[in-house]
Image 1 (cartoon, rainbow, N blue to C red):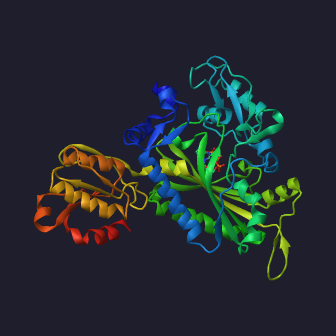
Image 2: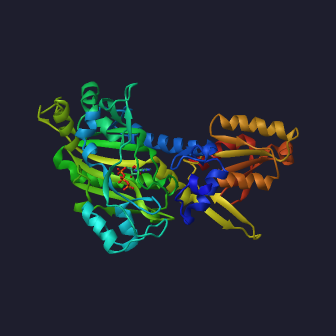
Length: 464
Ligand code: ATP
């Protein structure tokens, strides 16, 4: 059963995956039907975490900057847009099947894992030859009998009409970026933006990945937070460097440990068809160092191609010099699911306590934690219960709060530790005497007594 639901979860990820299920962060998709591989639901705490990440991203890169605006484009674009962008022709992986067990693999990954050498730049026949010559074994069944490598387009298809004929073929977008290029003209015509400026978008993207897996690291439906930053050609190097820095700053802001985030420059022969330079921010996931985000210099490729394929003139006129030109583009792109996975892995700790017990804790930065404060009455009964509810009502109007009155207090703390809640407040008998509560810090587990009338101010400071 577990195999079918989550087919390729590596051992190193299992504690995080188990916690996500146990505590309502992430569930396997369509679980009551036996699962639907590589789809996931974000549960009550996962959706809060996701929302905090997306809101903070929007605030950081749109609201706080004078040079950025937002867009929410459609998932279904005119099919010609995907021909113009190069995705119909070039958004492919090399696919190879095991004849014995029918296992399906990305051929470059198969070669890289078996031979520890890159398959980048190899043609399909070179890949097939490498697999045969080196007698590479099927990772699933061990056989050495593969089909020839062949091209596989990663875009999901759908049909627009009731008849579902081929003429009405449409694609689910494999990246959010293209919608921004399609609306470039609308944006310069209807707003006051001036080059250099950027357009940001958060939305779903779909990729029919051959070998998805590693939990939400590689899924078929995911969200991207993308920026297309429009510049003059001669500005690209300095803009690239400054966005690289902004991306590192973002990683710091959400609380990823600096030592876990690195840069990986794409060698020239590995660049996508549209890119002149790409640097990935890679993260030390438990299963290995892998791409978290990407930064690409897309040149003027996309705007020019859309102008060509649509027959619409797309250019920018400098309001002062009246110079007309097609802007170049720097694209920082951030995957939401990979952000969440990195945050969960980074925050996860199984800690041995002084008394020998173990506790599992998520050390989320308060700004992204799904729950900021939990409120517990020591006992359900009044007067503690009603006093606790009163405090809870006051705090929940400001922060995401939880109220929990069931079970031993220690268990309630452990539950909040696993949710990554930075602070817990307990209302006890002393509260009824001197109007103070205990405030317990998730990371140090230390408790201090705080007057109720200073709670909001103290928590505001601590949650900053
Ligand atoms: P990879 O090399 O891992 O397939 P990519 O280079 O194709 O990724 P991009 O096209 O640069 O990825 O996509 C931008 C971002 O979207 C990535 O940096 C990643 O955060 C996210 N992303 C891409 N594909 C997936 C996926 N299948 N599942 C989850 N997130 C993804």
